[in-house]
Image 1 (cartoon, rainbow, N blue to C red):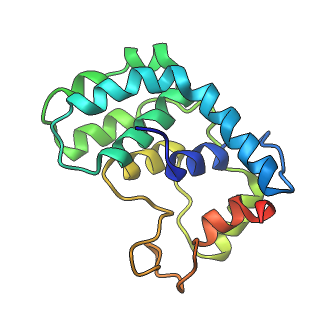
Image 2 (tube, rainbow, N blue to C red; image 1 turned 180 degrees about the vertical axis):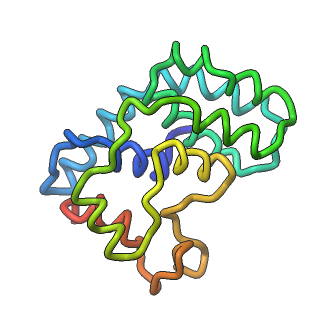
Length: 170
């Protein structure tokens, strides 16, 4: 299992020092660097997702936990209650509390992204709230099979969030 665009979207949304890319090739290089940086986290998160008994989308859970581990670091992630909660059947409220109580290292959305989200009337959530939604199988910025986003946007190949993050890569 490898990180998906959902993982990349969360990481880039909260990375204020993100390099502006001007070509598809630069975007690919940025993606490759991110995949190399996140490799130690993948090795920790993947076994936790595979042993989990949840019916929730495994890719979404993986991306969510990977974003969390990448943000706070492997040691802090493993020291949190989340790995132990994954081994048991717990309520959504308990899992949400576990997510929300872990402080974010990169807590602020990029300022120009905040303007973009407000423009499309998308909710401005905390990093942990976005990660928790993804953990539950709700990819806030993904599109469904009909091409519509969660918040009812007109059909696009990519919804406004992804369009914004990748606009310079076209």
